[in-house]
Length: 152
Image (cartoon, one colour):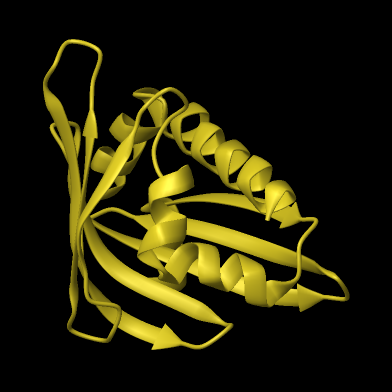
């Protein structure tokens, strides 16, 4: 099995076209004041605790769950190419830990083609995360982002 085949079996991917210019979509991903407005599932308020947007920089967001507990998302940026890509380690406690998230941006006229990859350590972990609702969960997050972009 090639490395590419193995990587594909450990990766969950969502794609979407946002009806917004790439600069705005990029800012929504890279600036704390924007992130707080859309990150997380619908109905959850997000607090940006740390956001050191540079390679090697850490990020941490918390969201209050209805039961009063906190859902914590954090990671370290590993690769950033302006208006092209953002790669980061990521933990989404208490549900997911030790993944890499990859956000890819492509200008399409006045729109932005967006690809989101979540790379897991093993194929088994990837399938487990898929069954736990990866597509519904992240789909909801990107719906919030789309709604936010329409207001900006």
